[in-house]
Length: 172
Image (cartoon, rainbow, N blue to C red; front, side, top):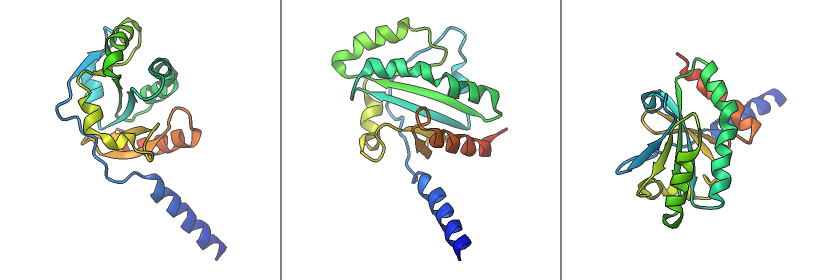
């Protein structure tokens, strides 16, 4: 009986950590793609899965931008694994902060593409990213932009472990 109950809890935990079928929309989005000189953008846009990191105008934008450099551990994992997974950093600052943030991002020597949401359409198309249920999360997307997993992959070790487990299903 005790083993059955433990099995039930494990199944419940696994089912509850998967995200419902939420589609992230990129319709009518205009992105200025900021990246390093030797970057292959196609690799990040056409992979089987991708991690979506979305930084909006809520909170400290400079803090969020500096946080991008802490993704190097996850980037290193993606590069060393056989998973076909890209990384999409989308930055959508407020209109009043847009020029300053855009110029600052251009000056960074960041090794991966940053998609600058010019007309804030990404923010408007995806209001669910602002709900309490999703605020502060990163998302693992399938190629059709369906959310497979949500979590704070950068700051939460258990969420990172779930990410690596999920990515193992997409290895080439």
